[in-house]
Length: 227
Image (cartoon, rainbow, N blue to C red):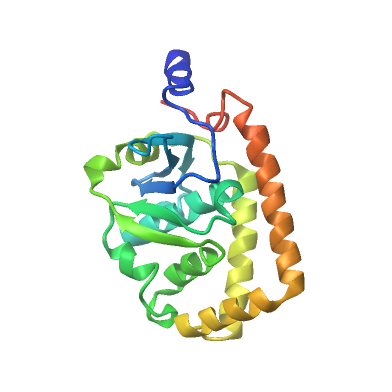
């Protein structure tokens, strides 16, 4: 196990994060866990290199989600896990091997989704992303990470996810937001000076975190357990 972790953190396999490079978030869900990889193109632009790995077990309740909900959860959780890297990017790409997500997470009206999918969609609103279908055989790393996930669930992550879900539920109950309405809200936010100050503060905090993270050879593996 130690040898496997050592191999995965070697320079040829793990790359330093660079906000100027094209970025992808690869996410997948299995029956009992979630897996994700943050990827960036190398300097030559001909190969995608992993920057960060993540894995998470599902709670008994989450394990009973429908598969489409698990896949949406995987994409949402992956983006939140890598938020320090991807918030503020002009755009990044979410990779999924579940084609229905292309419609559910970008094209469908919010009021046409189930309550759980609505919440995942709302949690993704702070990110500027596009979503692409990738055949399962090309999504092997995220798939593999989802199958032997961490056996112990990080309680702090559950608390944070619960807080986010609670806030989203409050917003959802306040008004029925269509995609057009959400776009109008986003435009109004962009005009608000206080919003921009908060956004800039979050981006600066994220950049500081990125600099600290890239100085560690164990980047991305401190919370991952490989079975």
